[in-house]
Image 1: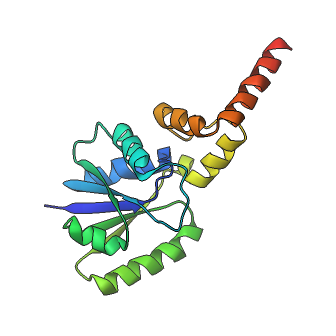
Image 2 (image 1 turned 180 degrees about the vertical axis):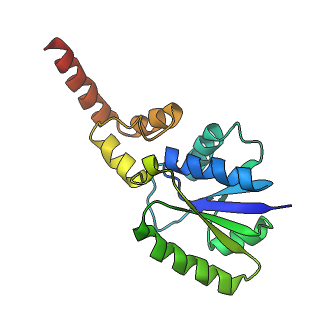
Length: 174
């Protein structure tokens, strides 16, 4: 059985992440999406909320399981009995960092390979950080997220949403 893990913070899950999940799940028998619970970071969403959003977004993919983990990705991969770690690449700038991780993981666990998947071109610029910044200013994030995830992000920025709605109402009156 071919098992892979796709680790990340997914704060929140974007359409770029979902694209990687869909494509990776087609390549393996079982894909574990690992939601990193890094105490050093201050995520917008709790680990439980991030798991729920991924499960909602990937519900139609029967071979995808979402789990939280902390610590090393390689340990998470071993716990899942995975042979592969999936990593998404958006741009050449991601490659150097990801290559270092893959080589380090390969030394620690030679039995586990890293698969790099490039995102579709339309998501090459997309990051969770960008989405949060746009949302914090009341910008439109529906281009980047599923409607359910976008709703949850906007709930975290009520003042920005109020400004956005006021601006839209002002444009409608003109």
